[in-house]
Length: 264
Image (tube, rainbow, N blue to C red; front, side):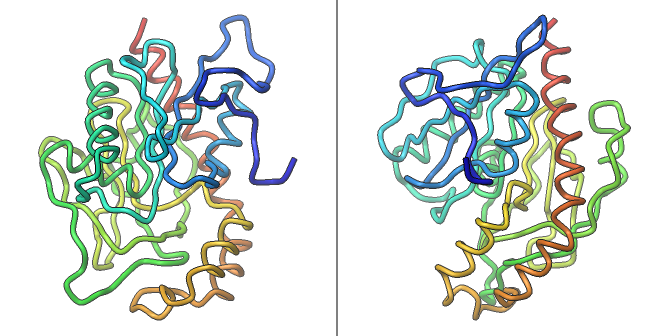
């Protein structure tokens, strides 16, 4: 198995494999991806280590979404080259489906595009920088004091830099709590809604193979203001990736646990 692969459930619901569980086995995590061959990287690997099956759906390519998340422990919607502002039916369906997670108080994590969908659902803008700036590569992201209180506190040290790959950002939705920021053209970097709905602009799921593939297949994107050179991205991943993965392990464990506590 390659470093960026992990056991999954197909859209049909047939389990391929899963990690060993506990006396109260974790339920699957519903994962929404936007490209035919994309994968959930370190987020998926971490959730599998925690005992979850990944129920992977690609609505863009015809997969359905369930009516409820009652049989899942959470929902993660990942990024993609499209925009949350696009009129496509699958964008509308995915955005509306986030409302199921909010209504049922199930853990929701939106990564990049997924965070922008959450912002759109809550009535705020997703926008490009008017000067054409982007965030690509490892960039500084500061945790606000509100981040220390997530899931009752006790999260590990916030990494100083996270991987980014986007040309759009989001305004802070009404009623949301800003938990991370920076000084870029897209200062809102992470926000929470309720106990377990979180949108993040950055990519903690990124693996070395993904950094290599994204930066190698999109050379024109690296000419924009705010984009790191490919060599710097690869070097920074080796330098900063371990801290991000340590943070991610605890973050995801607390994110799921908070949802289970709320369901009791």
